[in-house]
Image (cartoon, rainbow, N blue to C red; front, side, top):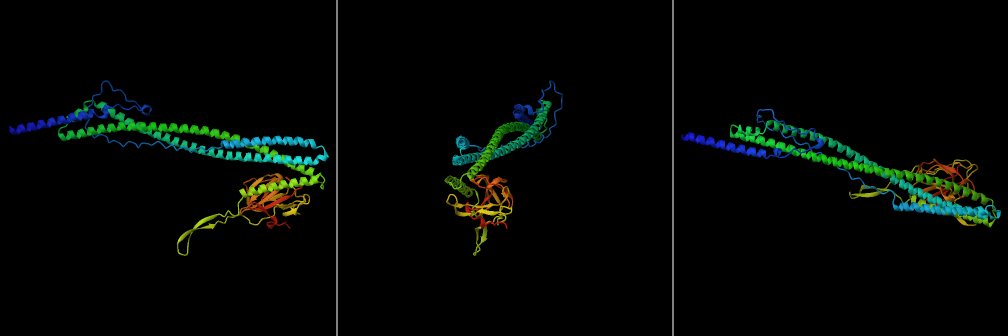
Length: 526
């Protein structure tokens, strides 16, 4: 009796403990977030909404206690592509540049008024022969005034070209920014598509779980636990149910995270699209500004060409009227002196220009090399870099026959003015020399090619090592500043533009901007 009673008590205790475990498991499951929380609304990203529960569920047998499906690792959160900060757009034209252009325009208009006044004075005296000196003087005054206008127009064109270069750089920069943003947009769209696919798959899995729970009915969980034959089975089934609940909870959390990621990606996409729109608007503004500046350059260049042709005519008319004067008169000598002064002024101006823009003999390029000294220690030393400069020997700049020196280089007493002055180059003349080709005497880079006052159409070539050659009074020029030329290349034609009594080539050789005797470098053809 004692043994039976003991067995009954033991069995009774086990059943009580089993009921207590069941009660705890039920309470745990009822408190699980899967059953306590609502399914999050995924809006447009879900494939279908959860259907309402049917009024009478199909009778189903209690499901067998199977292991909960393994929780698949949530897809890696796709981070929103980092939006690269667009580089700051540098200003193309500053207020100072605009002011400079406006000042140039005002100066030009002022000089234009002076030119009109000179024209009136010239018309008043042009009909009287004894006023011929005043006619020539007035023409020289017009030449000076026109040259000032040419200088202003040239400066304006240079400023506008800098503006064009800066604007083109800005357009390139903005296009690169737009391309970068478009790549970001494409990457973000791909990430959004992938994230929506992941969300749909996760949501389908959640719907399947909800349907399974609904189909199982409310009593299935209790039935699974209460049908346990022993304590070990109870604990196993309790653990399985807890894992199922945790799996469902993780599934809900995954959906919430994926929705947040999707919203972040869409926000990033909207920001990139707005940036592209802003950059396209900025690009259109820059392109419009560029076109306006190019039109300004074109109109200014056309006006510059008109003024250059005008000054050529003025020099030609001045020389014609000068030749009509008495060569022995003081008036003639005074006008020749004025002409010489103009040549000197241009020569000095070009000397400064060459010093500023051409190479120098002191510009020795070096490289640092590691060498071993007498003690076996390594050290760095600078060694000169010898750059190839093409042919170092100059050829003669003309190929026509019968060339002679009409005026040599050097100081001389002018036969008319009596002034002791330096003739800065050598003048070459010949019968039929007019419009004959002029050739580059050595490889080099053109640093000046334009009309330059008394020098007329003028070319300067930098040959490196501080050596430059100059070609004056050209009828025409076939190169532009910045061109790389080779020895023997035609660069222009012989003329008599500027202050020239006849067609000839005024040829100069300059070292660091200072003139030297050209005949030390070239020889007359035999």
